[in-house]
Length: 256
Ligand SMILES: Cc1cc2nc3c(=O)[nH]c(=O)nc-3n(C[C@H](O)[C@H](O)[C@H](O)COP(=O)(O)O)c2cc1C
Image 1 (cartoon, rainbow, N blue to C red):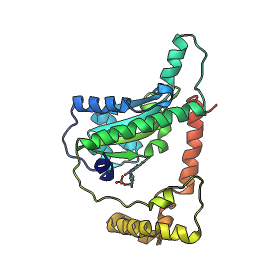
Image 2: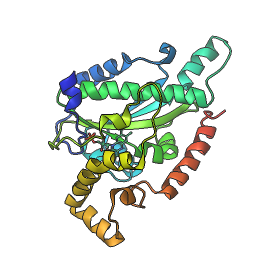
Image 3: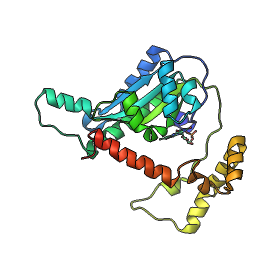
């Protein structure tokens, strides 16, 4: 288990080999074994294998090639709709159509997704999460016909790896772990703690010709400038997506 988790790499390029139905079913069954709040299992997953549907998902996930290459795309959703339907047919008192219901489902969904990732990696499959799920939440809801109470929270591409990337770097553990109380780091500790990341990320980005050109043309010389530039996670993008998420949570009946 330790070896498996410590050798994780996101895989973004896949062979033509399909994922067998029985194997996919085993993976999903393993996901179902995950812990969930109150054992309510307030999550759902949409399996996409159809080429035309994958092409549409490719468009929604900002044309990430791995969506077309992977034989399977999984969209994990917070789902209080099914729980609320169960309550409705039993004429019990309704609940869960609020932010807490959404967060309950979102945590259940992500835990199940990660269980599936580890199980998939244990049999030689590769996975990559897609944060673009948030960016396209409103469009995904329409395309996947998600009813009120259901909200996409993360997606995975899944398939047999056609690449063998090196392990990505991680921050020092003591930046992440706090004993008993949160300890804010000094500026020097922040600099020292991020020095390795800064160096490795910069080298990685510059090794990709298209990124190197973009960085040079935009005059970007630091990793943090790149992270908050229009190429990645700009404030403008964050505000636009955040506004859409709040509106979409409202229309999905998951705000208050
Ligand atoms: C929530 C989440 C969203 C992610 N979104 C994307 C994505 O949209 N595209 C992508 O290529 N990688 C995505 N990744 C993969 C990360 O870039 C990757 O996990 C990180 O760079 C560390 O690399 P590693 O997983 O190979 O160790 C995502 C990962 C997570 C956990």
